[in-house]
Length: 459
Image 1 (cartoon, rainbow, N blue to C red):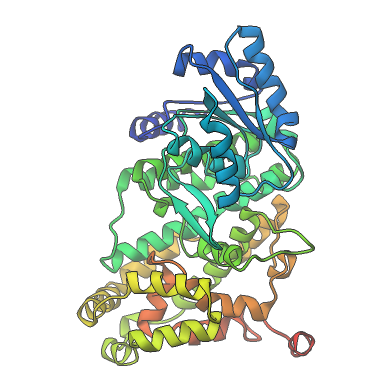
Image 2: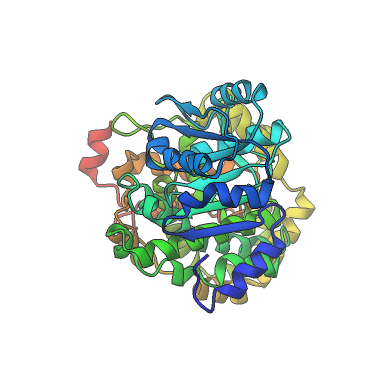
């Protein structure tokens, strides 16, 4: 893998900490070496390509050719049609196809193909190899597969690939928007890190220093050339791929997505669970996460303006909703159904006792000066992040992915309920300041002002 001198020790440490992945190559033309690398990892075991129609054309044929030249046994490829999506029916389809076929799967594609292959390989008791065709997300080297199951976006526990090959020639030719999507996903790690800082300050989840370093130490260098991503510049794409892979290694080491996923991903998961589409298709994961990043960052800036060292802990406890009140509220904002049921389940899992709530809020209040200082140093200003997304070719306003200001406003509360992970949304909800903070965001002086005419048009 091609890294700067500063990054080489970081990669070496990440690979040592990784539980599953033993090999990573990020270079132009590496798809032609797939059979050779496969043999070094798996010996003479037969291989089996999993792709969709587009990714087979982009790289699958040449991966297949590398096995023909090497004389290595390769079963007939399994190629999904245009219906492919990271959801349970496609998992079942792939598992049924692979059950009767000998071979270690090679996932040739990006997020969807990788997640489907990862989960099915695990269920069949096989390792797998990933050949990345776009720098569209950080899941290649991550532990777990993100699959929509019964209408709910869920992460299923399963090992990461034994090896990952990222061919920069193929990635540079990825369909428009895919690499920009990966840029938005990588940029999100900063606010995800802020959520981990807050969770540690509340006494909920301590930071693992080595995992933290894997993502955060070089993050700003990895995202420092958004315009280069838009132009498919090789150096910019290489840094992007390196950052995404390192992010996945961090999740692999932690066996959780905490190092790379916070409130910003909850917005994306929410819209997934609501089956959101824009202009007839679902916006990419990264583009939804990018808007979620802006939403979360704007929320942080609203909180950082407050003197939370004066937080009235007992007043916050007195206003804390009972479990029955919470469930009624969930039904009120989601309606009855599977999504509301999932929100109830996740909220029950993270609801603290009153004593735990008091302890958390006391820690946050007493530690606010230091916590605020950490967050200010850690976070890039909202406007600068919005400009970076714009320059990379990513949506930087919610309407660009079909989310109205009114819907975004409701999404703050909905996103809080759908996941048990402690984020800045939990901090605000427990402190009793969620409503007032959101109110500011959509005021005339906030980052998401709702004009009277726009409000009228949405009625």
